[in-house]
Amino acid sequence: MRRQDYQPLLSADPNVVWPGLPAPTAALRMALVRQLDASQWWPAAELRTAQLRQAAVLLRHAYRQVPFYRTRLAQAGFVPDKGLTPAVWSRIPPLTRAELQAAGAALYSPALPKDHGRTYELSSSGSTGQVVTVRGTRLAQMFWDALTLREHLWHRRDFTGSMAAIRPFPAGAADYPAGARYPSWGRSMDGLFATGHSAMLSVISSPAEQADWLQRVRPDYLLTYPSALNDLLLYCRDRGIAVPGLREVRTLSELLPPETRALCREVWGLKIVDLYSTQENGYLAFQCPQQEGHYHIQAETALVEVLDDDGRACGPGGVGRVAVTSLHNFAMPLIRYLVGDLAEVGPPCPCGRGLPVLSRILGRVRNTLSYPDGRRGWPLMGDIYHAGVGGIRQYQIIQHTLQDVEIRLATEHSLGAAEEAKLRAWLHDRAGYPFTVSFSYPAEIPRGPGGKFETFRSEVVV
Image (cartoon, rainbow, N blue to C red; front, side):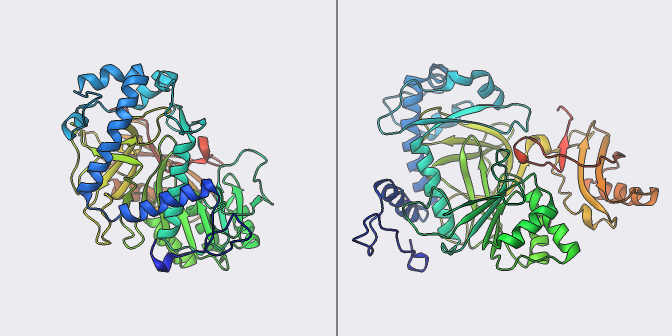
């Protein structure tokens, strides 16, 4: 941790307030953070060697404890008592979501290494229609906490400020108008740093409710979903609403369109700091504090690969499917798990960190646009609000067939034929193909499971 990022530790001993003496669990978290501070600067080759060394331990455990993997690993040439080579690693078949769903509890480890702590279970949002349940450990949770702290330190946040989060919460836990309040920034900071309070609001609240709540709470930092943020920004722009004291906006869980970054600068004069994570694997990549377009893979906890259609690793500029191995979750090993996302590999970062780079996260495979000639593309359609048609509160684009696309619109007033023609021309221009376009006008377009919202979805099976 460099001097400019220094924050005084919260002492667990009231008789020693400086230097701070953190509680035992917090001290372990801090020890991890200090190691992460050093390893982020390692050369990429050194990081890869360390990853394979840890992956070998995980594979030995999976081979001996989880029958599902024994044949799979043996056929790839893995021998538990030998080291793991890149060649062996590349021969291990990626784990699909369908396989994970079918295997279920068969992927659970019946015995865990000593000191990995209690286990817990969580389920994905099911936005793919394939709900999966995964199991983790207290150790894996501790790495999550250490990475949370790393991300705060990277972006030099003022821990004395307040943090607000607009995201999914159980019914009644953070409902409008009051939301909920917590005395600190959460578990990653507790017992280690003194922080301001945090406030929480359910993402199912309307943009008007969110704007009202933010003006009352007046946070220094805001964490929310990109889709919720975009709706909130449009609402605030049209009404000239500011959030006094807000310093930074953070987003997670969904694809962040470049138009939303631009809109945040236009409306609030603020940058967005994006995070890439999944329910099953935790944090995967953080936005570089120096290079906005770079996402640094969190290589110390996750071995993230971007694979082409033949299963080979993509080089810089290559786009492929994201495969993830959580290196420290021994309760339910997920080895080369295809999370369902597409990403683009980036070049080494000018910031000097050796952590691998993703230059673009393109979202779910199911969110790709299919063309009649067999091509697939990424419909960056976030600028529908600049198509010259007013009164659009929400929109969603659904591809039903290789020729037919539906634009769903929740509008403040009915659209005429001329306005529909503008939107049809806009879609043709962005897609680069004259799809047949139909329109529907629901009163509201609800969010999906887990509070997520997809502006584009394809129902085409390819």
